Length: 342
Ligand SMILES: [Zn+2]
Image 1 (cartoon, helix red, strand yellow):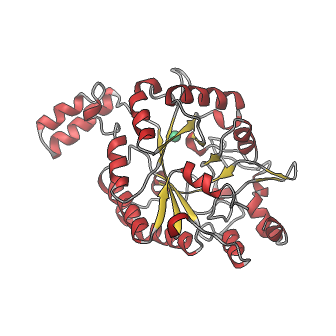
Image 2 (tube, rainbow, N blue to C red):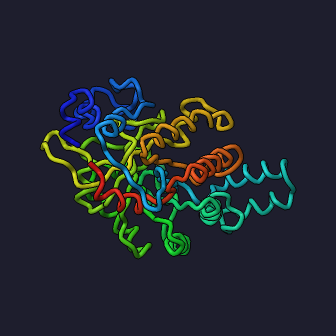
Image 3 (cartoon, helix red, strand yellow):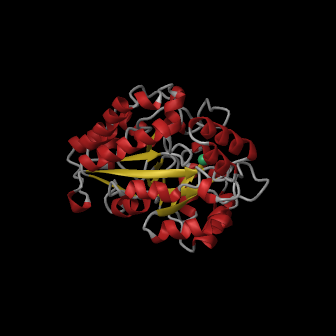
């Protein structure tokens, strides 16, 4: 199948992301953005469509028709005092003073903290027959993007794993091109989770082609879930299926599996699409993955699980259930795809 793509120069350039080798423009976080890309049809999975036309045969367990990889980056868990006051005030107006008082305890009690919501997220997903991956940060105080002590979440990590959901590593701001940071953070996570970390996503979707893939392979990760654009949803290299990346410098495939990110909640904000108006667009994205029997990867932060954001996330789960999607962790999907990726 790789040779089939190679026979078409423009598809190959897109698949291998040739334009991201020594890019001319990067944003303030050193990210390659869609606006710097030559690609002009981000919503068309052109490479996947080509492969399907060439006879790529996709099967899923239990006759599922396509895949939905559900993921949550846990950037914050504890509320700052200022935030706790704000949330308390908001609820004081909308609900009752008693509720507001409880909110003030957010920093000390997980029961009143709206971001300490791992069980609620799992219960919601479970009600649709779905599972997901939580990517946790394993940073030390004073490291950039440090927000919480992972050891305080020991019990939560145990519960997530026990229930059959996945704990992956959410690499820190500087990790994506630094093997030592990746392995140090991986070791910290594994020491607390007691389990080998299979999946990785970098904070801020910082990613360098092909460096990040190579470093994650060296660090023994099975899959990466970072590769997607922060400012738009769609298909960064024309693929709506997991794939094995190709290093054009060394002219060899890279061992890791990429489950490309196609939709992040925050992208909707960048695109100025309010969550209560987003569904038709998301539905057509999901439809085009379904049509190709692909696997759509979705990032929904744990702090966007209320109001219209929660309604939108629930709609995705509803759609997945109705259309018979395999909604599960990156770990299960990457294992399944291990022998099937091109
Ligand atoms: Zn993050």
